[in-house]
Image (cartoon, rainbow, N blue to C red; front, side, top):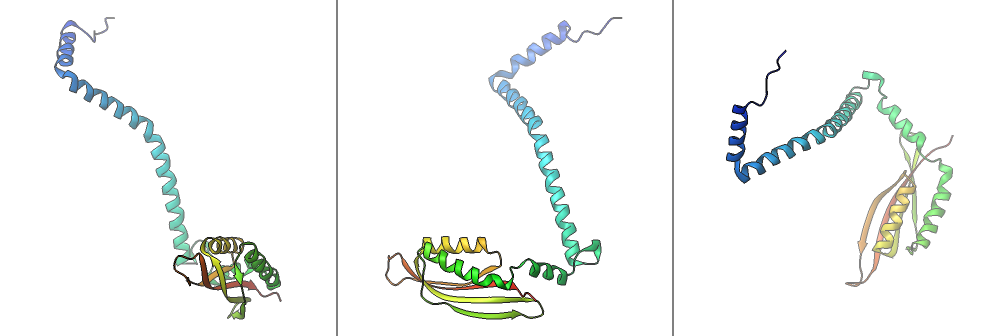
Length: 190
């Protein structure tokens, strides 16, 4: 059996002619094309994996959105069930004294001066929950105030910052007069 020759004298002459006619810029172009092909071959699998992951996340969000819009589809919870679950996750009302003590202790540690605090208790109508609204003036510099508030909001998920107003008495001074309003949600223990 005689295999066909890939390189015969005629193809060798033609290949040499094409190679010599490319010149320096032509060879640079060929090299760039080869590099681009290799890069595409290397990058394509990771991009496809990333796209697949993104498509799965979008599909999950779409299913969740459909369940939120139509609670009857897919056994989704009703709004009342979702709120009841949220309220069950709140700290009990008995945690309020510990929260207030922690708030004051952390204020002292962060150099936040609180002169007085006004408290109001509001029931959350239709649910076994209460909102403790705290309102107080504070004297502190901005970095300490921000650190203190961030730590409180991070450590107490049922705490909400409702009001924050800042006033500086002296231009260029570091000390701020702040008025802070917080809400602390708790569940009623029956």
